[in-house]
Image (cartoon, rainbow, N blue to C red; front, side):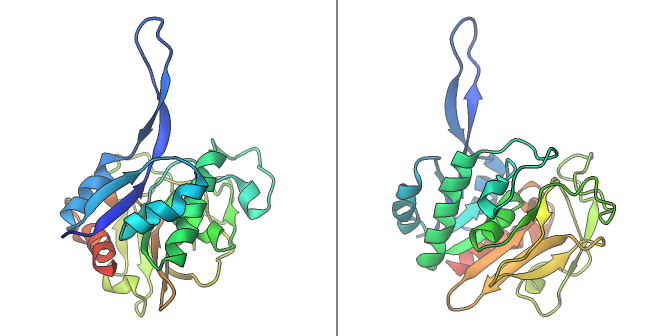
Length: 239
């Protein structure tokens, strides 16, 4: 039986023709479900429900993928929102924070993608840069204008890291973010960075944690890039 991999869902409004009001729907990027299937897992989309449902959902799955999406509300890491912050969904933040904490409690494998990696850091007590676009220290284009399947910048991977077994040093990745990890939470370790020192990957791998997070989007490149697929295969193997 294939491992069951939970994938965090999001909500949006579905437009209706004529004078019929739009209504809210749950959704998830199909590329993540497809990547999980190619990696040997069975995807299960977890809808946005209530934080108190987290334990039951996590009990039902073998691993968890935290998908990308909106900015994370800075209120969850003790800051007021700056003018540069984008759209946030505190409802989604609360639900996913509960899922993360429950997955850690139940010792389930986690893969965080983009926002998902950032949220793991927040869940464990870390903080974020609310916007790196206008900070002169960050010179790499982290919110690419090219098509999603094109890799646009380099990541430098720690040789002795767990991630280093999956992703070669100086790999090229795609990039769609304007927030980034600032203060790294314990027990996470930064295992990949961009040339301008933005944290591009984190991990925590011991008896208490099974966490890998990447700032890029491997679900958009796994069909042509083996290291991208390897991230999903590794998640399935960690279950």
